[in-house]
Image 1 (tube, rainbow, N blue to C red):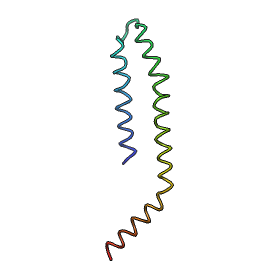
Image 2 (cartoon, helix red, strand yellow; image 1 turned 180 degrees about the vertical axis):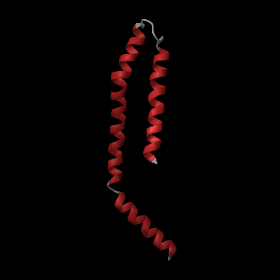
Image 3 (cartoon, one colour; image 1 turned 45 degrees about the horizontal axis):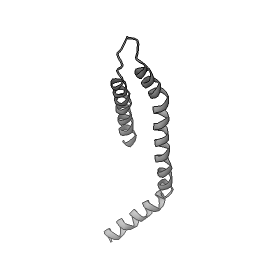
Image 4 (cartoon, one colour; image 1 turned 30 degrees about the vertical axis):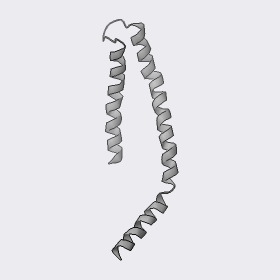
Length: 86
């Protein structure tokens, strides 16, 4: 369920962000592009993915830290549930 949410969220942002970048730089389809629009196209094909991958890598570092703690967290939750039920 979490992965489906992430895919939907990524698809939405993946369409929204480039369209807003192109809109702000004066992109007009099927026309010769201005230098600003050409720069925006280069940005979102090269630099935007690099930025997003860097952000995701940072998130994954924190995720791995807490993923190692998962067995302890589960054991603590089971112990709490057993105390509550007793």
